[in-house]
Length: 180
Image (cartoon, rainbow, N blue to C red; front, side, top):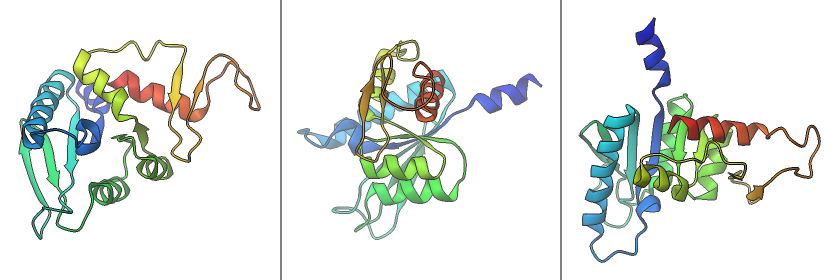
C-alpha cells in the first residue's frame, strides 16, 4: 500500500527547454547541459518523471531524437518541427495530468484543454534553483490561463461565487506547485 502511494505521488513534468533557459546565451550548448544536469539532480531528489523538449526545427536532424540522462528524458524535435508541437503531441497522446513548464500562451491553453497544468517557466526555475519555494503558502498566485487573461489575484477578485475561494485553475496550479 505504501508503494502504491509513492507511485501516485510521482509527477510527470514536461518542459519546453529553450523557453526555460532562454535562447540569448553565448554558449547555448553549455546552458542546455547545465539545465539537464540541474534537472537530473532535481529528478533524483524529488522522484519526478521529467521530459525536456528542445527545438530542432532550424538545425535539427530529419528525425526526432531522444536520449535519457540520469532518468531525465531529453527530446530534440526534428528539422522543421518546434518543441511546442512535440509537447502538444505528448500531452494529448499520453493522457495523464502533466505539469507543463512553458511561458508560451498557446501551450498553456492547450495544456488546460487536455487536463494538464501549465506552470510558468520563471516559477519552475525558482523551484529548481532554490530547491524549495514558499509559493504554495503564498496568498498571491499567478494564474496562467493561456487565453491572454493572465492576472495577479490577491484577496477578493471580481467574479461570481465565494470571493475567498480560489478558482479551479488556481487550485490546480497550487496542487501542482505543492508537488514540485
